[in-house]
Length: 234
Image: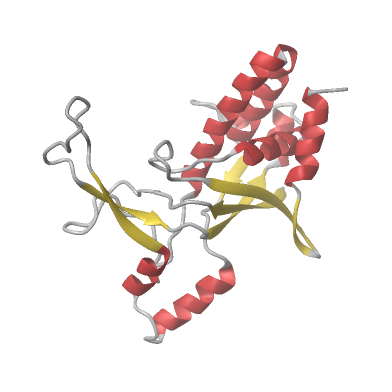
């Protein structure tokens, strides 16, 4: 098993709706834990990485068609395919993205001991933004379209553990090196996330880290450079 960490830094306010709201407060609420700390579901992150993979494969098909089949195979091994059998299950496992562990522990202690309330914690990391649909002809707001969504504030940093099952890679004849190179390329190109990402929200920066005895060390550029050398040989 290859263990990595994914760092996600919000460069703008970002909407990660959990699919429901809070009556009388917001129409789109964010995921948050018992202490009020926001987090992102692993399956949500995996879905966004899959979307970035599709974009990358399209670019490869246009630039270097001969390489697209190889990297398409790596994408399928990493992320799986709809209706995959056990043998072809996705090799990439994505945990939920959380605030830094020491920060979460400190906040949880404060909430447990009455120093902070859960709603105060949530409000410290988020804000509520309102918007309405606009009539294309008149430019006026449409009736009954006002919606309120909670956004996670810019500069918030999340960490998610990633695990790559090398047995599943080998079962599909894909090397761990290719998997790491592709993952680095996808992460480095990931610039937008969440809802309203085409309306000024959701700008992010993402990076991969390897973990070892010395702690977490960023490895995005190392594997990205190797990927570039493979797809754009001199």
